[in-house]
Image (cartoon, rainbow, N blue to C red; front, side, top):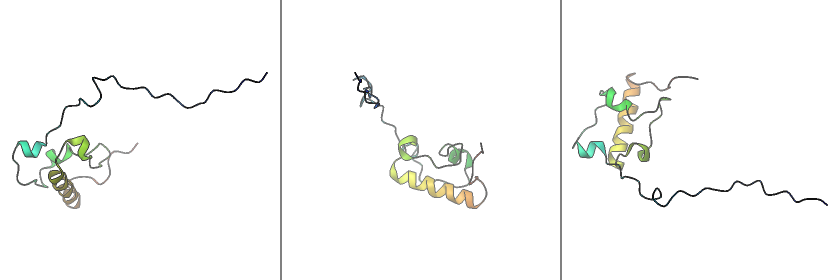
Amino acid sequence: MARMQQSTSKKRRRRPEQARGKMKKRVCHFCSERVDYIDYKDVAILRKYMSDRAKIRARRVTGNCPRHQREVAVAIKSAREMALLPYLGTGR
């Protein structure tokens, strides 16, 4: 008798009820500090919003509000133009 093979699809695990939907809301660092201008020359702050591969981190990762995320992106791009920040991160 030939046996039928079981499907190879993986079963998804569900998160416990406590973990689902109970994540802490991140607040925008710039809103809480009442920063009105993000300076492209302040490389130390801008590096926190870049990955080690020199990519700009997403808003959902950093916790920025939409307005400040746009300003951070523009400041990083300006700093790259002035050669204050790298276009490429560390290679493999």
